[in-house]
Image (cartoon, rainbow, N blue to C red; front, side):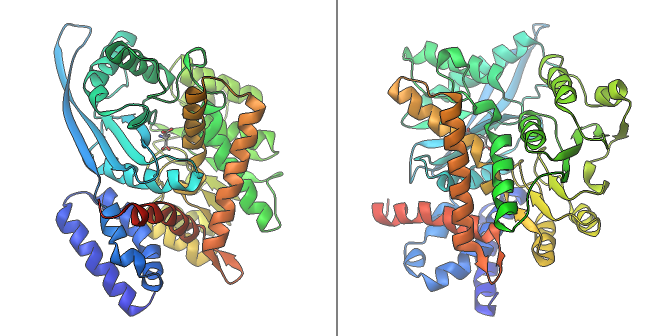
Length: 449
Ligand code: GLU
């Protein structure tokens, strides 16, 4: 990086940190974009004149609200709800809702910022947003989850709508929670519209939505490998997490002939060296989605190793796909992966590698698929759920899978176009510049509003 760009970056980050104190995840997400965008802006001063980076790092608005609900013992409880409406430059605000005990404004600002670029990369008309609550769904009864979702939506409903802001799921929010929220929204506005995505199939949901994030990550990985004269067949893969993204990442990897040897949850990691089979994956899905159990039960059932309190990264592999949560790969983990000969890291979760770890991947020259490109398949099918709702019809599984593959191939093309560095492709740079341009050009065209 040129010294003048470095000065500009330092100065920009200094101002951002001053305006947004105590928000390290937001700082990290912005820094990783600014690293690539600041040198680009130097050569394309129109974006500087319009202060695009400054405008994009200030959310359009943030709604923060109290959510009162009643637990099964009749106690009154209070949690905090949020919606960060980051940018509607290219379409209605769009992004998931996260329920997790650690949800804070910092986390949701980083996620809304990332979402804006990710949604831009899909080529679909969706702005960026994120919402959530510090409500902890673990151990809550069905009734408690339903009542919380209803009370959360009772407030949020005033700020969303099919042409305004379209939420969806994220960590702690699956089809059960989306459906309760949709029910509450419909009840309040007396309209059946596509104001939320990830709905059940019988009431406006889309086929492939559940699978899309995981499938999409594997499609991007497949494009990356093939672009470099390699393929997925027989590759040894580490996957972290065991939720929606992880499950369908593993499913597609098995289908394409890779050997997946790990999955995990917040308590530990299972190591199945022969490779997780379709039958074992079906068992794990039932464990996680129906019985809501822990992955340790998989190790007990199939007599494989279980590493309590550990993440998978110390196990030697050729490919790593983190699908759990932000910053789950630290510098030490990244170094271990590289020392063990890992040749590709593709991110199913949002920002799962800390920034120094990403630097190590890029220095080592391995294939690195950043989350805003790699996990865009989920929101892409959400975008197509909105399209189907507007048309009042449903596309087939084949049609949607074909479109998903097309969108992931197009994201790969954009990354190559903007990230080519000599013989190598810097996918981080490619995704950052391509996502930035999609939103920036719209901001320039619409004027200073
Ligand atoms: N929460 C998902 C994401 O991080 C999906 C968002 C959506 O479908 O709107 O992209």
